[in-house]
Length: 283
Image 1 (cartoon, rainbow, N blue to C red):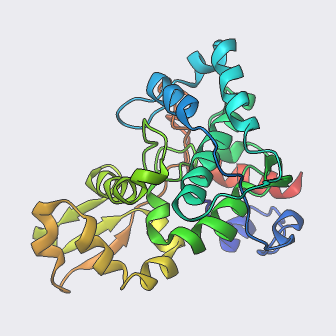
Image 2: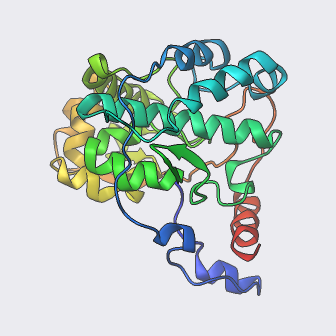
């Protein structure tokens, strides 16, 4: 989900040296997919989402952090992922568990560092191997890129929340193996229907969509191409327009401000993002 390397021209323009684009040490570990034990109960996570996440996917981090009982409930839920599996989850159960794990570990990381203007202000948020799953420590990138993308395909990008305002909105329910297919389709629809995140402009023959589509273009190409995905999941009123090829695609600037129901992240801009990315590479 995370943004790619900083534009070298911008960095040079302000005379701050940064590391060359490429994998960090934590990104160069084994590419072995993540196993997770079967039988994890996701009801506690669903209750927490219902309590602290609103209809737009914004999180009441302040209230959640202030509630010792709810912090404990989140940690106890995440502890279920830690053991090496005697019986590993497979198929939809494995996918649903790892989606829930990604989102829950992300929320826990934010709560541990709240208040913060952005997940990008924190060190190695996506590459740090700090989360216990299946008997080993993994990063958010390990969960997303090394396991979920190959297993679940393009729709996974509609359900992983990176705690940012331009993320696909965090759902107010846990993902469940029995309903996973319908949940994935539904969240694609919810994401594309959000006019602050994706815009379809027939009069201008233009689609303005999230940068998430550009960052993960190969996944959408495997599903018949980006235009095909947009036709399949965009709001019904735009599907006739999207059925043709006579429109251009533009990518909206990503807002990395925290997806907070309060004031945190509301004014997190491009210059602050640049500074945070440079600082993360240097520290």
